[in-house]
Every structure is written in structure tokens, then in C-alpha cells.
Length: 438
Ligand code: ADP
Ligand code: MG
Image (cartoon, rainbow, N blue to C red; front, side, top):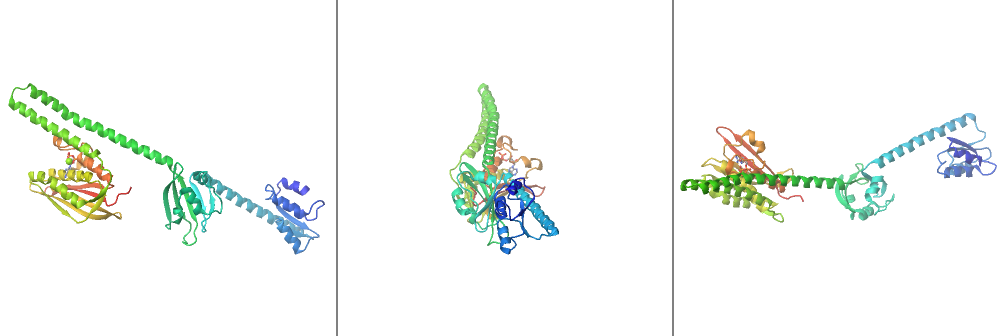
């Protein structure tokens, strides 16, 4: 029993004779190795009487780390004990490394889990268990597919063959992102590394920011609209007052004519803002060429008054998915601007083409005029709300509204302009993807 007590003090090595007064040495060794507190103590069993191979096997099976029989050479004993000590140090180092690794693994806020090539759960960290929640039971060696079927309602992520898979799922009230990476390069026998991230909070934050931005933009717009309407309103009040106090019919006519210009300006501002906020319900498939044909015919008369000719060149069957009312407004604005910029007897050329951009099919519409171009110093402001160089005749909302509407269609709008003496002009280009991502 002395040996068992000695083991409790956790020495590095215990040298144990097989023949003991009260209990066999084999049994003592078994108990030392069976007790988790003392299991790491090395046991070197020695015996004078049990010298057969069977005895050696029995000792080693009972957990002994070494077995020496009498007569024991002093040098051999010392060397054996040294070897056991080395083994123990190596074991301790390995255990420490494993502990460090597990602590690191557990300290990560991302959930991590490993799946072996047979599709069994091997290992996971604390965050993984936490994100999975109490709904599912994590067992080492259990089938990962059925685990995910219970957790996410599908085992799709595990059946993807790409190198990397990423998708968002709902677990309870939380939103999580699951990333599946393959281990190694052999496609047949591969384990997988799963990364699970709780992205609920960042999603909420993102939503809050977006809403705040939207509100700020709406507030800014409302403010700007009020401002824009206020100026002509003040002018109107003055003109009406002047007209009502004047006794000359000529003067009155003059005031009324100015007043009607102001009314037209207010009408322009409200028309743009109203159309902008009117939403059609669902995007539909639109033939872009047909749509531009209609817009061109809407503006042909106004253009003709300025002796500007609108010419439409279109590829057949260029279609996008979108809101026809909004796109009519976009192209109407651009064609109106081009017509206003174009010199008399010139042509405004509108082209509709289908193109590939970034691997995505889409429609490209260009509107080109041979006007005097956009001066360098105002290029940056062109798309700002209420930026206009047309004073009372413009609302300054056309390009801003167009840009916003094109962005709603996940498209882009840009322009090129040159201001040479001989050759000048501006081309606006709108790109619209055929299919919108939802
Ligand atoms: P508005 O036409 O009411 O002024 P927009 O937002 O449509 O407002 O256009 C803003 C400004 O951009 C215009 O006032 C004009 O200075 C400039 N612009 C737009 N289109 C053209 C064009 N095709 N050529 C030259 N300048 C243009
Ligand atoms: Mg305009």
C-alpha cells in the first residue's frame, strides 16, 4: 500500500517490485494507471522471480512503462529510468501543446468544427457548440450530415463540391454564416473544416445604418425640395403683389408671364420628386430597345422644335429585368439633357447594345450629343441634387434621380465629355444588368 500512497505525491518514476507483501505489483500498477490523478506517473516494474516473457507481458498489459528482471545491472537500471524520464517529458510537452491548441481553439469567437473524410464530426470548439445552441447534441464520431439536417434543416453545405462554400442560415432567432472549407487536395478522401459565425448583431447594425442613411437622405431631399420650392414661391408672391397693384395692362401681363415661369419651375421640381417616389410593385422583363423607342417618340417633338434630330440605333432583343416607369424617367432625363445641350441641326445618337460586364449579361445604352460638353470644374457636381447650370429652366434633379434609379436596377451611369474647339460633345452611358440580384 506504501506504493499507492507514494504515487499520490506524483513522483516522476516509481520502481515497483512484483512481489509485494500485501498486493501483487501488477495490481498496484493497474491502480496507479487506473487513477486519472496518478496515471501519468511512470512505473518501472522489476522482479527477481517473475522472469518469463509471460510475466513481462502481464506487467506491460497492467500498464507498466518498463520491466526489468534480476539480476539488474546498475547501468541498465539508470539508463531505463532516464529513458522513462525522457518519455515523460516528451509526453508532458505533447500534452501541453494539445492543451494550448485546445485553449486557442476554444478562445476563438468563431465556431470551428472538423469533419473527417467519412463525414463524422471529429472535434469542435466552445463557440461552435454555443452557436449551435441547445437544440442539437454534439457527439464525437456522429454523422455530420444528420447533425446539419437537424440544425439547419438541410445538409446541403456538406454536399457542395467546390473548395469553399459559404451561406447564411437561421438558427432560432439568430443569423449565422456557415463556411465550409475542404482539407487537403485529394478530392476523394477529404475532411472538412467548418466555420460558423453568429452575424446577427452585424446584420442588425448594418440594417440600422442603412435605415439611418435612408432617413438622412430623405430628410436632406425633403429639405432641399422645400428650399427649391420656396424660392419660386417667394418670387410668385412678389409678382402677384406687383400685378395686383399695377394699373398698366402691359406690366400686369409681364408679371403674369414671369409668374407662370415660376409655376412651371415648381411643377418641374414636384414632378421629378413625385415620379421618383412612385414605385411599381415588381420588376418585369423589359425590352430596352422598345422602351427607348417609346422615349424617343415622346421627345421627338421637343427636339424638333430645337431642330435636333434623335436617332436610335438598337440591337434587337436586348432585355433587362426592371421597372419600366423608372427607366423611362432615366432615359427621358438623359435625352432631354442631350437635346438641351445639342446645337441646332445636330443629331443626338442613342444606341442600345447587349454587353457582358464582369461576366454578367446586360444592356448598355449610350446617349451622345455634340453640345459644348461639361466643363471640368462642374463634372464632380453633375449628379448632385439641384445642381443645374440652367437656372430657372432646370430642376437640377434629372441626373440625381437617374443615378438613384439606375442604382436601384443595380446598374451604373457615367459620362464622358470633351470640350474641344472643333469637336465637343457628351456621352452618357447606362449599364443595366439583365438579371438583378435579390
Ligand atoms: P437639369 O437638366 O435640370 O439642369 P440635370 O440633373 O439633368 O439637371 O443636369 C444637371 C446639369 O448637368 C445640367 O444643368 C448641365 O449643366 C449638366 N448636363 C447634363 N447633361 C448634359 C449634357 N448632355 N451636356 C452638357 N451638360 C450636361
Ligand atoms: Mg435635366
